[in-house]
Image: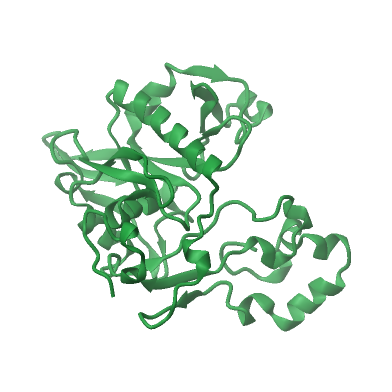
Length: 318
């Protein structure tokens, strides 16, 4: 299903899966009964402290191999960012996972989110081996300069594209799991002193800061992001719920303030499961419309097990 509600006649063919290729009867019935609205697939199901958490919430979306793949992508990328003095931090859902849960990856998420200083990462990729194509970037688009691909290390590659989140990291030959990287800039005052840290709106539209009540921009005073001129707050977290390996992450200095500004004042009390990026069918064209959509839940964070209430802010049990 589309991520946001759109009229059925605007649905792409792939959204209908077998309903469009095998028979239009199912499609007609789906439209007649207005299934996505009746079933509430565009809504968030709200749970209370008295409700049991569905097993879906605590069942990791990624398997052990995929979690290890993300770990390799993350450590290889960070190694190069640090070696080239590129300021970086985890962002969005990954920042929430680190700050609120003490893990790099929550069970209900399937990617990592980061941000890096634009000029630094632009300079870094120019030192990497350039490839003729990638999983997110065809050879034709590379030739047309509509995207670029470089090798970070081994099979870990990074793509640049001109729209949306500009940089994407993945293992060669595997589209998911992946790492999304936004770029941030510094705005300065008349004296040339850094004033704000900003991620351009063009990178965020229809992305991570889309909220129920509108679009939230990422623009914060430099002192709320950096603890010194170039430094983020360092923190050590576990890799995931099932993997106890520890990794070092960088966070915005006033992380709690930033996350509350983006997601709401109750972000440390109220948890919401993530949108799942990849299809849950082996072949999306063979799926019925509902098969690729995972229902989202909002629930009290205090309902989580101890190992997911151990971030920078300790969350007490209900």
